Length: 343
Image 1 (tube, rainbow, N blue to C red):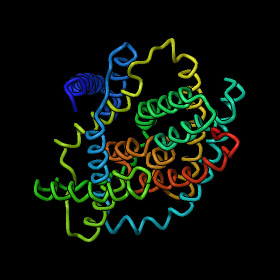
Image 2: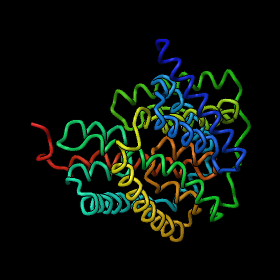
Image 3: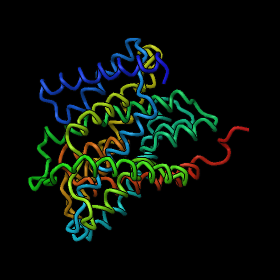
Image 4: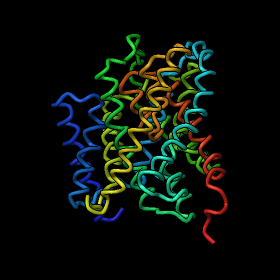
């Protein structure tokens, strides 16, 4: 990183930290995510150039993955026998959310079919934007709509869980923090597997590297403990700041239509996802807060962090979001079709 990038990152971190402190003072749920996301978003729209370096972002994903995996115990696999129905509903939910949101964008906002489908994709932001760059579509509309969805879900899901008192009373009891030597080794090994998964083109590869190593070591009993709060809390602040930084350098005037369409679509998909989560919670005997986070079409890393912060089952949540990303990787090229590709 050169000096301007370091300065930009420092300002972003400062604004994100201030947002987290304000959210804590107000009493927001998940304040370390919501506060920075809102503060950095408004600062970016006000004209500040903000951003989180790629290296820092990747480190955040690895650490969140380790935190997710640290909750996995043999008892969880006993409970997993109720998940098959829930897994099937992931495929159903994706199809319903994708085509419902695309229909809204085409009918109400006059988006062309390709732009509407890409903007309506329920997640997999990096992959969707890569597809959009190769298609005949409005790349800015796709990017903004997807970013608005991630931001809105980051803010709304914890508020919904808190306001409607959806949190499961049988909260997951996290083990004590792992020792520093073990944490360092876990970070190194997890980063190595993350880079390997990245080479194999896995979605959310670095996060999955952390999840894989953490689950493997915790389920066998070779490692115990979770990521200490002194490290995890700053990671949440950085993740919230990263979400907000996607609006840096843009203005309200430039984004008015895309922001409105993004918000409308987010309301539609959130209502549909909430209804599906209620059905899954009832028939699969899954806590409603975990089902809501699992079926919310937000970013995998953000939803994973949210599951840990809200004491929902992070293994259940993570498994569903990984399945969603894998299905989207196959589904999106098929529904868009060859005629949308650039010649």
